[in-house]
Length: 102
Image 1 (cartoon, rainbow, N blue to C red):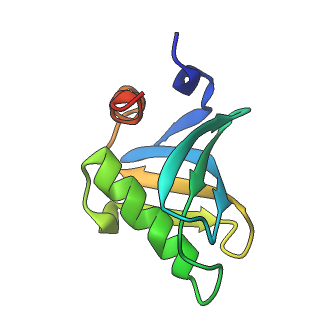
Image 2 (spheres, one colour; image 1 turned 90 degrees about the vertical axis):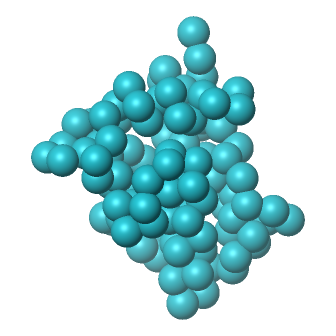
């Protein structure tokens, strides 16, 4: 069993949605792992002018193999806890992509 199995993912029209906890201003951008039922992500960008949110979108798009435009922050724009939606992805493909470097 993988730590990613505890990530709460909801299937939505055309994709999936899940929670993230973002740590901005890190030394480097990376997937940290699962924290409870959300994905913890560290990004090097500061939490100013949407820069950390954009870094989260880029990091997730690259890791999941989807265009950056397919990744949206749907809530929590100014909070460390966010809700992310990824279009064109199933839960199983999401978990598989997240496990890749586990």
